[in-house]
Length: 263
Image (cartoon, rainbow, N blue to C red):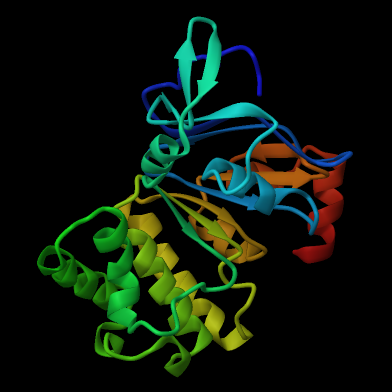
């Protein structure tokens, strides 16, 4: 890890990534990526396959251990603490407690097949946070209703369509009451006719002020909801800015070449 402690995040930043680098053997998959996500904003990360987008997201919530860099949530370092001008890694249990504030929605739904829809949403708050079922149950039903699945609470995941399963996964992430939710290509495993039912839920979250980072190939969705668009290529940020700047008037030749083929 980097020896130097990063500068504190501005008060308005819900999440800040500082110089994130991740290597697998000799391959540098994420190369010094920095990103600032203001509270209540939506950041969409676009780019070709193999650009390092998913790995970067996994570094943010600790699923991948960074080789260098730092992540700050509301200005507080995640997984590390200051010791003078250096950083010391926290114990895994302490780091895990911090990261509960970052929700994650995966490409594959990762629901527990032996649990009902309601229990899938409840399992995090009850088992991880230790909250009583009497408190979590009503909140789980409110979240399922919010994603349009209040009538499916007693069903099991395999009885649902892919779009419905992904909406349960979103409700499950929200049940932990996160400060930030990360979405890793949440519609990539869905049949085309099911994509919009998931994107509609995500549009509602964006409009409600949820802080979101979304890795996606859905450029129309990014154009509609993103406050910031980041284009990654070969592990680096090739371009970052407003939707209008990046999608409609990209400055990078690589960005222009990519969007000329997909827009």
